[in-house]
Image (cartoon, rainbow, N blue to C red; front, side):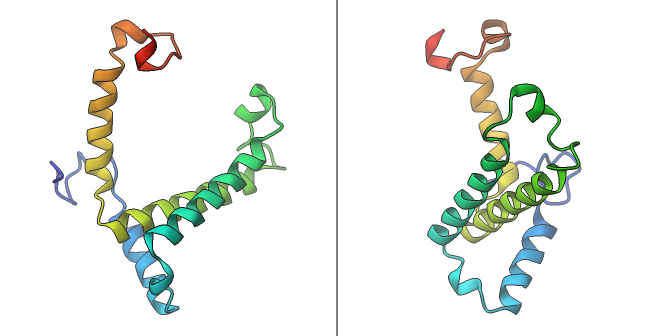
Length: 128
């Protein structure tokens, strides 16, 4: 259960309006019946793949400026939006409170990666 209410200003993730808009969009087209968790995960994976494709052959510096580069900016925005749309729709269909999930994951990661031990390291938690 989430520690914050949907209107709490301390919420880290508030997608209620987006989830409602996506549900309405799907319902208006009679697409909700296709929005099974399996189908939504597959669609999400496809969109992440399209985002990866944009960055696939870029160097580190080029990738850092991809969202500002006129040749790639719109594609980056479009694919990020697609990823968000499918992620939020999936969470909504599954009844997952993204705010609660993110808060729990941040707490878990803080325990796994204490700053005094991992600062400046990219090693996985079981490697230090």
